[in-house]
Length: 477
Image 1 (cartoon, rainbow, N blue to C red):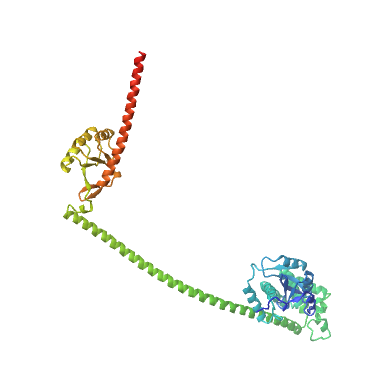
Image 2: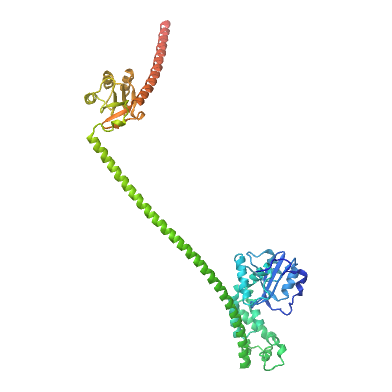
């Protein structure tokens, strides 16, 4: 769209003063400035008309200032980045002007759109020839649009006072510099009444008594009346023509601005429609995906529920089947026990009566392995009964008393805790693997022998110490 920033479209600094500035000079101007090795400068008047668009390579600041002031009084220096660069601030300070920058950096797309909309309305000289001119013009146009509503208010109120373009420019300059619209209108009107400026604007038309609407305005020079009163002293035809001309110019500018705005809105509508279409497509896709996932989740939940029901039913049926098989065959399950499994003879109570009842019921005999379900109440006497029977080992579910344990140790009957050996309950009996039982008995025997050896050694040492003590007592006596 734009030419590259090469030699074409960019002026050298020594060509800067060759532009026709005198014929384009206006009072208030907005300067769009793009700093860098190649400088872009766009100048708009306060009616939004482009009066200069140039770019210069390796130009001095003094030359930039001279170029700008040739077009009028700078009221705003515009930039397309935020915050404003240091170079822009220096230029604005030198020109005694305010700086105007966007609240965020303008994107390339927004700058192209702004410039295209502006040039499409026939507002440009030749259009930007490179990116530097484009950026400076975009900054200037953006700044003008930011002040457009206030400018319209000024023009509307100035029309009621039949102010000319120069006076309106002066009001805009004052408002930009911080004054209110009402005060600015009053001051400009009074200033032009005092200086006779209104009559001097059209001196070249003094010879015509009928065609010049400002003919009688020269009388305002030494008048102390209100400017609106003097304006009303013009003939009705002249006053009507002046107002209609101002209104026509204002309407033309307003129409151009509306066309530009309409173009922008049409582009925005197209863009928004595309966005809506994209979002709608995305929503449709997400909705279909969401519906599919919902259906999958529902089907998955239904399958899980069915599986759980079947598992529960299977567990119930299996439990019922096992219970029925147990009732039909008392030896059910014995096939799961190895041939070398040892059946445990259960003693429910470690008392004389409990041992007697269990011996009759379980037929406890020499070489059997017994399981003490409750060792409470058992002592050396009850332990001696099992020693007399000649059981092979005693498995306990809790801690037996020390006297009972000493009796078992003296009889070399292993005492094995239940949690150290695996007990399997099948049918109506309890069983342990022979291999596990032999291993536990072996451990108990080794532990007991070590303990007895230690005790015997201690006893021998004690006997020797006692003998020595007795011999010392005899010698001392």
